[in-house]
Amino acid sequence: MVKAIMHGCNGKMGRVITDLIKADENIEIVAGVDAYTAVPNDYPVFEKIADCDVEADVVIDFSNASAVDGVLAYCTEKQVPVVLCTTGLSEAQLEEVKESSKKVAILKSANMSVGINLLLKLLQNAAKVLGPAGYDIELVERHHNQKLDAPSGTAIALADSVNEALDNAYTYVYDRSQRRQKRDEKEIGISAVRGGTIVGEHEVIFAGVDEVIEFRHTAYSRSVFGKGAVEAAKFLAGLPAGMYDMGDVIQF
Ligand SMILES: NC(=O)c1ccc[n+]([C@@H]2O[C@H](COP(=O)([O-])OP(=O)(O)OC[C@H]3O[C@@H](n4cnc5c(N)ncnc54)[C@H](O)[C@@H]3O)[C@@H](O)[C@H]2O)c1
Ligand SMILES: O=C(O)C1=N[C@H](C(=O)O)CCC1
Image (cartoon, rainbow, N blue to C red; front, side):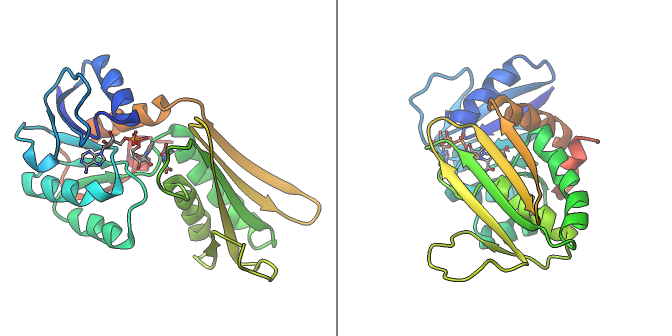
């Protein structure tokens, strides 16, 4: 039985994962961490991860970028692998994730769903054909009105996947409002929409002369992320230091 600490246990994703793990006989939550503690839980909850003295095999993190430094410090010190799902990390934090992965197992993914992880691969084939053929590449993401970061971590991951297939020759443009010029051929435009309770939508648009090809992923519930995170936690527990991603968990 894998013992997990749920970091961000009282947030939207923390609640989804708590329910999923209750129904899974191979993993249990032995402790939670959340700055907001006014929620009844079946496991002990600590306000800060540094206060958590419960032994575990893995940490699952869905919290806030400001909390991630503490998660990395805890996991490297206690030698507990971590499934890092929080988005909106700074460049310095991304560097720290890399450094920490030399000391402990880290699985970082902006999106735990099967669909997005498949899309990351499919897009590379499309980009290799459509990029050199001169198709313009644009990305649109839509999320709920509570989301703090923009663009989504998934949008950045999709753009990175396309860009990697094109020898990283493209730059990202997030806002055209101050520009009075045509788009560059080697741009990926990334637009973010926020509203209501939209769980998560991503569109990757290849626009050519007289034709448009679009790839779209829609998450209808948070359980698509939750299921992936639980599988990732079971996969990561006990693994040596290193950087892992959902491609290691889902074998396509
Ligand atoms: N990788 C994925 O598949 C995926 C999917 C959904 C959400 N996310 C990301 O996960 C994060 C959380 O999403 P959410 O919708 O659950 O958000 P949320 O705001 O509903 O929940 C976050 C929880 O973290 C807690 N928290 C914040 N700072 C903390 C701290 N310093 N210490 C302890 N707890 C703290 C909050 O109190 C809250 O309960 C976001 O960054 C989001 O973008 C990733
Ligand atoms: O609800 C969120 O917040 C989500 N965040 C991730 C992102 O930023 O890509 C994944 C989708 C849901």
